[in-house]
Image (cartoon, rainbow, N blue to C red; front, side):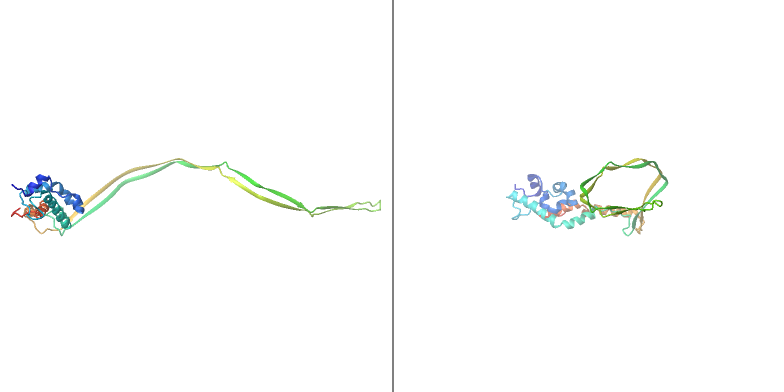
Length: 266
């Protein structure tokens, strides 16, 4: 008997899950990461007997082509509805508390308090020593040239009167000599061989006698307007029992609907 349902292709080809390469950006979506390892199992559990369309894309006599087109159809639908599924996933995974009013206000108060003292004690001393063993060397030469002469004149005055003999003399010096200093590329070179040494011989000790306290307070304000919590819990249970809240099954069913004839109730 010719098999043309999802269970046959699931058994024959072992998987009906689209590859990440065929899904593009969808492959990195949080909901696909959750759904991917369960995709085949959900088909096997809920939709094994779904009959594939009888058309050129899903020929019963060409199993390979039909299998490839099933995977292609799933991938196309998932990519076309990525934005919708991304947003639905946020809604389905959001925390819901039926006793908390959405019009309420929620906030946090953080407080830090410190008691006690903190003391710093500095002992010892720090010293800096400096030593320079460098020297100075001179290059080039210096010459002195003299020109002109100095004239030294000595004069003596005499008297013929022996009784009143008195010698008078006078010395005079006439400077006519000039000294010229010539510097031939004279350079002084200073070699620094010094160093500074910082000697640390001090200690800094911090003594803390502190008590730190950190308090976080979560404040929720608002009024739900209803005092019957049992009514709220009952409505919450009904909400989560709806098929629409089964996100993973919803996505698989929508994929299956693209390649099979729909069956009432499934």
